[in-house]
Structures are given as C-alpha cells and as structure tokens.
Length: 402
Image 1 (cartoon, one colour):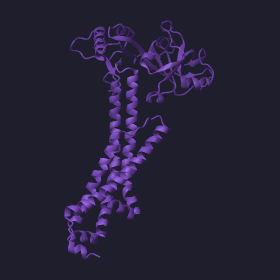
Image 2 (cartoon, helix red, strand yellow):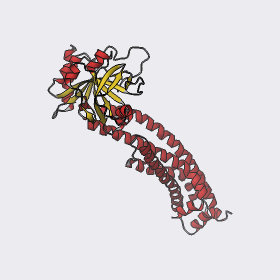
Image 3 (cartoon, rainbow, N blue to C red):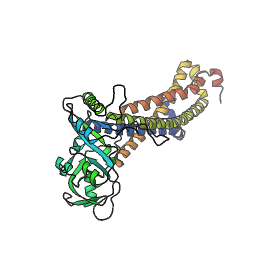
Image 4 (tube, rainbow, N blue to C red):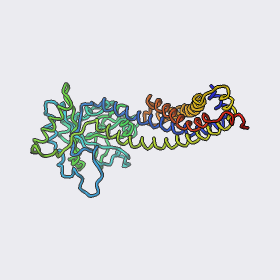
C-alpha cells in the first residue's frame, strides 16, 4: 500500500519510469503471441493432414543450404522416377503414393489477361489425401484422365471466385501457358496458416503437365500416405529399402534421395522463429534496461527525498532489513505496474494482429508468467542499490537532513 501511495504521489515521474518496462514487456507478449499462434496452426495442419505421412524427394529442402558454387550437395542425386513412385505405392505399409511437383506457368481465364500469383502444381489422382480440405464443387480428376493426359484442372475456391464470380466454374475453360484446360473441380483448403498464405492455386494431372506444358520433373516428389494401422517408421523403412534396391545402392553407400517427415517443417519453423524470437528478446531487453536505469534513478531520488522519513523510522526501531525491504518492494511494484500495462498493451496488440491478419496470435500462459517474473526480478535487481543505500543511512545524519 505504501509503495502504491508513493507511485500515485508522483504520477508523471512514475509514468516516464515505467515506459521502458511497458515497451519491453509488450514486445515480448506480442512476439510470443505471434510465434505461439503460428506454431499451433502448423501443428494442427500437420495433424489434420496426417501426422504419419511423409515425402520421398530428390533432396531434403528443409536442410538445403545456399552454396557458393553451382553444384549443391544433392546435385548428383537422380530425380525421383514415376516407376519408383508406383513401386512405393505397392508397399504393404503404404496406403497410397502420390506424384507431385510444382511448375512455372502462366494462368488466365481465357480473356488474355493473366491472373497473377497462381501456384500451379502437377499431381496424381488422389492428391487430396495428402491435403487439408474438401471439394465444394466438381470432383478430383480420375485415374483414367491421368493416364490419358486430359487437359483438366482443379482450382481453389478463392481462385474460382476471382475468375468467375458467382458463376458455376465447373466445365468452364481456363488457359495455362496458352493451352485450354477444363475446370472439373473446386477445392477449398481447411482454415490454417498455409491456406491463408496460398489462396490461388491450381492442380493439373502430372501426365498432362509433362505432355502439354513442357514441365520439368527434375524435382518430382512422392507424397506417401501411411496405411491404416501401420506406423510411420515402418512405412518409411519399407520405402527406403525399396528405393535403395531400385537404385542398386550397396549397404555402405549413402542414400541418393531424401525421406522428409512432416514434423521436419515444424523443426525448420522453430529454427527460423527461434532466431527471430531471440532478436526480439534482445530488443525488448534493451527497453527493459532503459526502464531499469529509470527505476534506479527514481528510487535514488526517492531515497534522497525521504531521508528524514528514513531517519525517523530508524529512530523508532526500524531495522536495516525492514528499510531495505521497503524500498525493494517499491522498486518491484514499479516494475510490476509497468509489466501489467505492458501485458495489456501486448495482449491488445495480439488481438489486433489476429483480427487484421491471417496470423492466429494467442498469448500463452508461459509468456504472462515469464513477463511477471522478469519484471519482478528486474525490480529487485534495479532497486537493490537504492534500497541498500537507504538501509545503510546513519539515523542521526538522516534526522538532520533538510
């Protein structure tokens, strides 16, 4: 109560002092909310897509690094072949194996005006088994259409709305690299961070892409869905054995392909955001240091202003420990008030981020606890010197102070 009374008695000085604490804590809260929200969305996306699924690819793009020369470490790895994908699909522990690769293509609605930012991918039939969503119109292309290299395409719901508005898109034509394609399905991705980032996409049969769009299948990948009742590791072991056998690799030779778990995307995300989060922590720590210096200055002024009060308290029996504790509590209260305001500001910022952007920001409980603990420790650390100085005062000298 005495500490709060002192803060209320010097409102302007208190506000300036806690400003650094407020900025530091608000930054930590907002960044924690963003990182936690994105991470939870990625986890839910992986869970919805099937946590036991994995990818067989020419190289692991999660571990790819920029190299100075023109020959990356995986440059000698042969591309994944269609026959290899078919062999993986026949394995006991595998439910299905889907051919997939992206291609660079111009996309328009047949009016001569290209639609920008459309991601076009080439896939086998059954690709929705490795996705998160559902058809809202039409259907997936059939195995027969894949075998016959039919010029059919599936588009996302936002792209269908952009191209055709309220008209039914099924059966209408679009053009990819100048060639006509018939829309056979409209797919809506379930709400998740990936669906918010990539809204306009189109999927064509991989055979059609190779035959009519001059697609490059050097980076063909196989999306593997683990069979029901099988463990991911069992399916992966079978896929690795099959790939090594088909490629004639001897026991001592390293794999010239990669098997990528979906969880590796989360690890990559954690590495990226970990560095980003450390930078934010460092920046917020600077703000806390500035606030801490302010706390020291204010508490030193408070000790000087209340020298006579300290002398009176010592004269009537207050011990050094009690004086020390009084000023430590005041310093901690100062920083805790700043932390509380910072949490309100950071929480409000997280709410605004969630409302105005695709980022599902949410404030974790550990961030609240960490902010309060950090503020309390900062208050004690920065208030220790002024409190020690007050406790060491000679009561006779303090009583004579004017």
